[in-house]
Amino acid sequence: MIPAATPDAICVVVTTFPGRDEAERTARILVEERLAACIHLLPKGVSIYQWEGRLNVTEEVTLLIKTTTTAYAALEQRLRALHSYALPEIMALPVTAGLPDYLAWVAAAVREG
Image 1 (cartoon, rainbow, N blue to C red):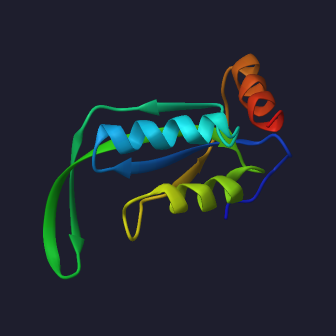
Image 2: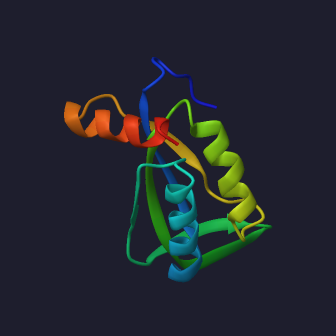
Image 3: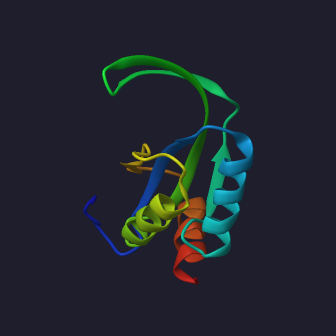
């Protein structure tokens, strides 16, 4: 869990999915449930990683999830429940600067949920 500097501290959560349909369905749920203000789906990219003793090369869709550090724990729990991977990539990156009006919008969009 990442520490919250303020109740409205913003973070970007990164995760990947095996396909667009699952990624988009999950993104819609997270935004509708106000766990995220906005989620950007990137086109399929290639991931290269070791898993269970084997080198894997797979295509995945990356999600960039804009949320608050206060909402992170609930978002992580919901994301794990919705995800098809046994061990999904879920990493929260703190936002240290940004357009103040945009950051305020993210905080308000999540807080109003």
